Amino acid sequence: MESYLADPYVLRQELKQVNSDSCIGYIGIHDFDDDSVPELIIGDDISIGIFIYEDGMAKKIADLYEPEVWGCINGVHYRENTIILVNNGSDGSCYVCLSYHDGEYVTGVFDEYNPDTATVNGKEVTEKEFKMRFDLVGLSRDSSIPRSRMKREDGIVTALVIDAIRQEDEYILIEDLDFGAIKW
Image (cartoon, rainbow, N blue to C red; front, side, top):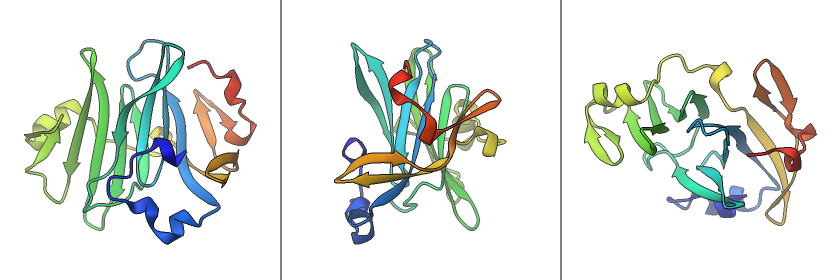
């Protein structure tokens, strides 16, 4: 899994990551662009990759991760056509977002410790402009992708042990999910 994910600050090279026989990660599917083909969300506490299905193959469309000064991802939320990565600090949070608007994917970063400089698609914007694109209000457990413990052997995920994927009012245990049957 990690070979498909970005590691811009080389955090996965830390000894505890390299020698771990299991990792905590995120896996989910969500249709951001309303084309009836959901995107695949896969990641860990360092980065999240978003993939689409195109020409019979999975194709990565985005690598999302917190700014270096914030470090790891504490939670992943989704709402309508947006995914929001959160890192919570003692007096605020940092948000990294991906959304789909007007036929294109849009990214944004907002840091509550430094609210004067948010970014959308790499350009500095005001907090108000950022929040017009990305709705941060009301993030809750109902909008989150649960973290899952994924056991691995030789870098290959061999079992998904905990948590569930929510589909409307039903939860499907990840360990019981037949990934071969998912059409995405």
